[in-house]
Length: 118
Image (cartoon, rainbow, N blue to C red; front, side, top):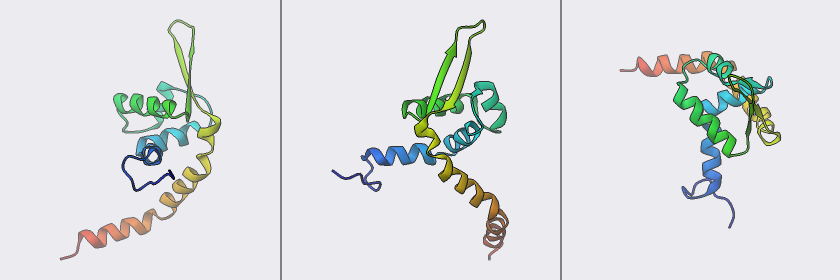
């Protein structure tokens, strides 16, 4: 059976949900610079709760997009990095980031126009 994004039971829809999630996008873009500790991710991604960051990292790890390495130190140190599969998302997400920042003024103008309609 061919993958069908429009079928709610298709695995490809779950993948799209994962990589299209706001926090997943921000985690992947943050990890583009290299390995990060949990605290570095939390500090960089403004507004993400501890619960959401943990859930997002677990989901990305489950899907094979992020690796988690625990170092046997006291206290334990945990590092997160993009896998080879995760790195294949970077061109797509970098384009999305460029579009969002490049068209921000136009989107804000459209919102203002919409919000002030009678």
